[in-house]
Image (cartoon, rainbow, N blue to C red):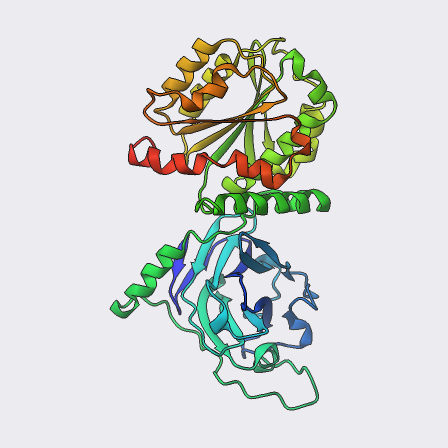
Length: 450
C-alpha cells in the first residue's frame, strides 16, 4: 500500500478498483457525498451521463458505479467502483470528488481516501493529506491513463460552490442559470513528487493515519447473494465497532474456527445454531483477514480439518458442512487433540499476522491436564485461543485458564452463553474481541510476534 502526499501518484496494476472516501462523524460535521466524473482528453465530460453520484449511481457504459454509504465506529464512508477494463477509450481520466452537505470541508475531520483492489480487497493507495477551509466540493483524486496503463493521483483541491460548482467546472449544465464561478481552478496533472522537508509533518500525519478504521472489502463477497452480502457487511461494521472501542480497528489476523462435534452437540447442529455461529464468525475473518478464506476444524474423540470456508461460497459451505455433525470424529470430547492439530497446522503454515482461534464447545471437558499442557506450550506461539462455551456445560480448564499463572503471556480467553442465537452481534463481537487486541502488543513486545 502506498501513502500518497498531495500531488503524488502511483500505478494501478489491477483490473478494477474501489475508491473509498472516509471521514470522522460527529456533532456539527457535514455529511459527505462521493461523485465520479468521466472526462475526455479536454478535461470535460461528454454529457450529463458522465457524472456518477447518488442520484445517478451507474454510468451507462457500466464501468463506473456509486456504491453508497456505510458507517462504523463513528466514521462515515462513501465509495465509487471502477472496472478499468470496461472504461471507454474516449475517457481519459476519472475524477473522484466529494461534496459537503450542510457545511464546508473545514468542518470535516479525518478526511481521507483509500484505493482498493476490488478483486482482493487489498489497499493500493491511501491519501490523508487533505487540508480544507471553506470548500464545499473537493477533488479527492483521479484515475488517469498513461501509456496504456492506469495511475491514481492524489489531488486534494476544492471549490466553494458545492456539487453545482463541481459539476459546472467539468462541463455539466445543471440549470438554465449561469454557473457560479469556481473559486479555485481545476488542478492540472502534476508529476509524482518526492516529499520535501516542508512535507515531513504531513508525512508523519499520514503514517499516523494509516490505521484509520475501514470496513474491509473481502475477496469473493461480490459473488454472494444480495441479502447475504448485506448481512456480512453489517456484521463487519459491528466487528469494526467492537475493535475500535479498544483502539484496535486496524489490526489484521488469520482466523480459524474450531467446532465441537461431540454427541451432545447434535441438537445445535440440527436446529441451525452451529450454522449461524459459523456465519457470524466468517464476518470476523472477513474484517480481520480479507483473503476471503477461513480454516475450520471439527472435533470429538478425533479432530478433522473441514474444507476451507471461502466467503464467495459461504451459503453452499454452510448447507453442506453444518446441518449435521461432521462424520468420522467420534462421540466424546478431546479438546487436546484438536488443539494439537491446529498448532501443528499453524506452525507449518506461518503468516506475518497473528492467528485468532475461535473455539466452540458445549462443555463436558475432562482432559484438563492434557489441555493445560497444550495451551501452556502454545503461549509462546503467535496464536490467541478464544473459547466460546455454548450452554451451561462443564468447561473445566478452559474456564479457569484465564486466571492461571506461569505462562509467558495470557493466550486464552473464555466466555459462555446460554443460547448464542439470542445474543446480538454487538454483544457477541464485544465479548469475542475483548482480550485479543490487548494480547497483540504484549506478544510483539516479547518477540513472539514480529
